[in-house]
Amino acid sequence: MMSRNTFFSLSSAAVALFWITSEVHAFSANNPTTIRVCTGSSCMSKCRAGFNPIKSFENLKKENEDVNVQIEETFCMNQCKRGPNLRLFQNDQVLTFDGEGIMNDVEMKRKSFQIIGSDEKVDMLWNLIKDIQDGNVDAKESGDVEKLTDIMPAKK
Image (cartoon, rainbow, N blue to C red; front, side, top):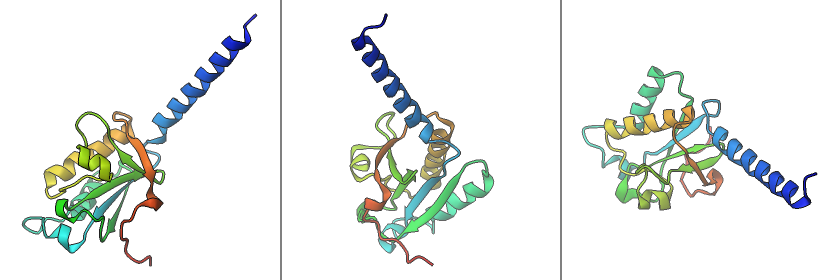
């Protein structure tokens, strides 16, 4: 017969395993990843030769219909010196990345990718989104999207 302590230890392990499993599967191709890009004048002025990150992401979305993304703009993330800036979120949670050199310390603190001023950076982030949806990269839920102070366009 199983002791009471063994039972509770096993129950705790089962709960932990369920939590870990649900955490891993929460980020998948079934749930769209939202790409929020700052298009404020200060951020966009840092782009060279008319580069526009939103247009680059929209082109990738047209070419890759299997990647479940939504693209939206914000007018300001209050990080103008390092713009254009971008946030990723899924399930109404901002996504950050601890390891693998994906985000630097400032980006982790501010919960955004910074200096999105080239197609190379857009491609890197697009591949990251695909890896999240394929389960190849672990994203960390780092706060509710509603708590952000991003200045959004008026809703139509």
